[in-house]
Amino acid sequence: MDALLKKPVLLTIGLVVVLIVILLISGANTTMNIFAIVVILALIAMVWFKYLQEKNSKDSSPVIPHVEESAPLNAEPEKQEKTAFPEEDEDIRTKTGSPCEKAGVYVCKDHPKRTVTMKEGNRFPPCRGIKKGHSTVWILKE
Image 1 (spheres, helix red, strand yellow):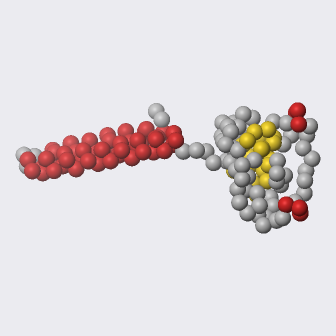
Image 2 (cartoon, helix red, strand yellow; image 1 turned 120 degrees about the vertical axis):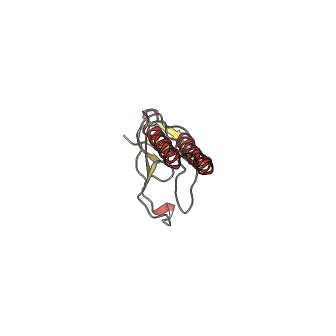
Image 3 (cartoon, helix red, strand yellow; image 1 turned 135 degrees about the horizontal axis):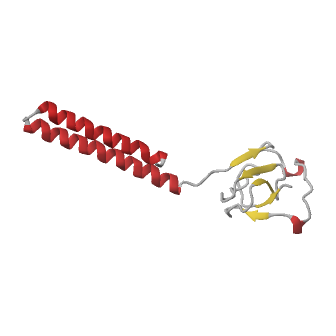
């Protein structure tokens, strides 16, 4: 059973058991029985509503990759070191917003000290270059 589904099922079973105990204890007290049924049904509805919210948020939430900041944001572009990239025909290059096809560490074309560790299927973030983010070409480090 899915771990996310296990908790609401156990809570529902527990609430039904509590309802049965309340109904057995209260006996023929109709007002108490109706009140107990309404409260327990409301609690069960809340449990399943929360489960659906968590399930939908897990399905739709984007995976945020780990971005490694290795140079200060206020550094000037002229002072940043340029690193040599491998030959272009061997490079794996992709743009901001594209899905990652090969996991690894990618470097920004414009800011060689800015790297991002990507997993397959995650979308590439903007580069947090100098002072503000920008769209870029990400190149896989070999």
